[in-house]
Length: 350
Ligand code: GLY
Image (tube, rainbow, N blue to C red; front, side):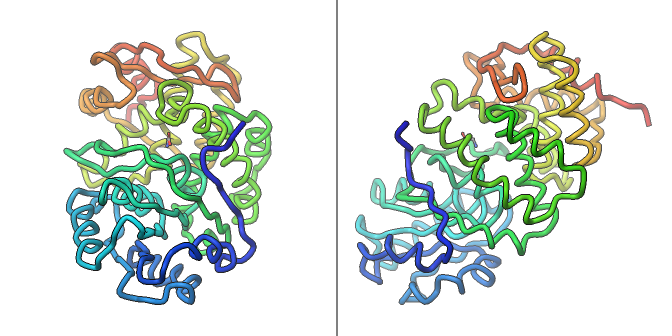
């Protein structure tokens, strides 16, 4: 199968990047960073960036994945004379990759861009597959486009400096890839009884990316099988958005991990997944991510958030559910009762 865009793993980041920059004059290369990647990651490539006035810095954090930040980046590019021959390098985690890709896909109707993901989550998910976007009206990635990067450069040593929460957040997406498309990868994951380590996570990156690449290469615009990448995300996105509104810390990957427990239970309830697989998934998520308790009064707001899910059709909730470890069905009609039953199945009186 032809891959939709290249993903490269250079031993040295500078050498890997150099060949892509050759086609662009120095003053046409822009780098999007946040305060963290500017400090910790940019020095790895700064020899190649001749003009520091081409470095765009935005604030980190989900609340800055906004239209204001997009406008700031458009303005920056305009003022610095960027044109259609300019290149935008997105150096950062999922937020930077999504924002930068959106800007690249819209500025002057599209300029080329490269993703250099610096978190585990963005290496295995956000930087791959050409989805772009930002949050709007309290909803995640509500506005966005599809636009392919020139390439994605994976430099795993970046994950050595991530904190535990960031590592586990990326691990949740690796679990998801295993559950929807690679039973062998899942075996490796459940056989790991110890705390996750950076070398262990390194060893999963390639296989995880392969699952995603195979799916997006066959369905770029998410008309079908790409929806399987949303396993865990109907509940996960709702939990994440709800927690954000309440000021509760809920990293994306953790929300997806809990979402995978709920959605596996729902798959079992609908006789699509066997009990053993459900229990295996539940045990694995709880072992790594702990428990998350949802209060009864949250069911309504969570359900309302799910109604905004982009996979829905004619206001009908559609969900992606695995039918065994390594295989996923899409477009499954789901009722309000299904959602409430699922949440209630995990309710524990305090
Ligand atoms: N993160 C899901 C997708 O790229 O389709």
